Image (cartoon, rainbow, N blue to C red; front, side, top):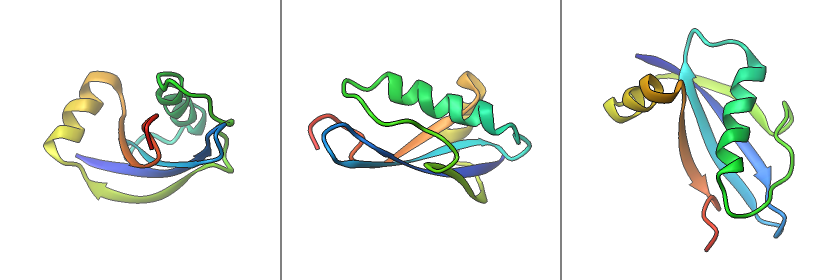
Length: 90
C-alpha cells in the first residue's frame, strides 16, 4: 500500500514542539479528514497542545507502507508515527 505522509509540528503548552507524521492511503485527499486524524491523536495525549491546521500539518511525500502501518490504517483509517516530544515525559 502506498501512503501519503503528512509532516506535522504542533506546539505543546509546555513550550516543546511535537513532531509526528500522519500516514493515510495515498488516495486520501480530504485535508479536513487528515487534520481530524491528527486532532484525535492529540486529544489522546495527557497534555494540552496548540491547534492543528494547515500551518502545522502539510503533505510531505508518498512512500510504501510497512505491514504495521497497513494494519493500523486498515483498523482506524490512518497511522501516526511519533517523532519528537510526543510523550508526556519528554
